[in-house]
Length: 310
Image 1: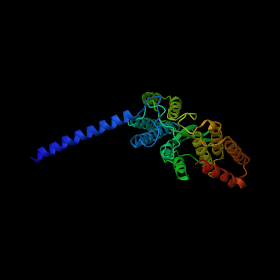
Image 2: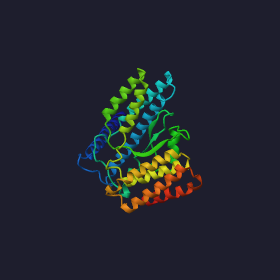
Image 3: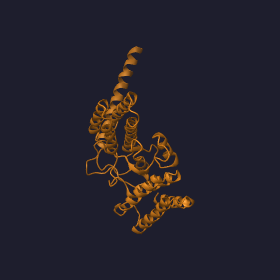
Image 4: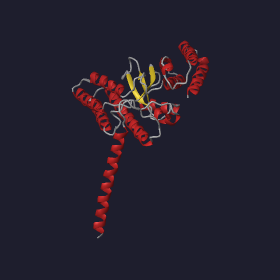
């Protein structure tokens, strides 16, 4: 009798699990709107959780691609080749849980309630110059905010040496992902590594990183947020003595200012945008002149506009 009861419980559990999995799949599928629709606000909490989890997996995927890229940039003995292929295999494994792959126009909101979801999209595009391999790389910010802690963590994770950052700007992980294209490219890169085509493999890994990012002009990336985030990055790099990287971040912020007037949710007037630009250019000039005695004034400018744009 007990065996029959246990068997019935087991069958019921399997059915319930299958029903739950199917319901989640149908919810995810039905939540992805048509090409001309928008995902709107955080009222759809189930969808937001799906997107947030989806973004976390994409960040893990980006880290695996970066690790493969870094492995190829070291002395290419058999062990490093093996490490690179292992990281690519991990990236292939991480592709499967990603759900939001075919959605378009998925999310564009400056609603404070949606801020956390939007914040979770940040990554940093680095340039390390001609003497460092890889010369370019993209690393996601794991935390949902730009802070000394989150940026220290990304520097440590990327094993980035002091004084090597020649360029840095904030980018945003895309909601869209051509999974089949990426899977095929990863398989191709594994073949390239086995065939000794290391430079080609390295270039293709970097190209894959950029496939995971939004265009800076994408409507789902607020110009106001881009300005604020790049000023935050410039402030951090300036404090660390990474002046070339800080100047690059200032350039990214001033570039986003050119489009802020077209951002419906920016709440930044033309006069205010002009003032921000002027003060950022002032800060850049101080850094260029190497006048370390007044770097506190530069930090004050950065802090002022970070607060104003938050």
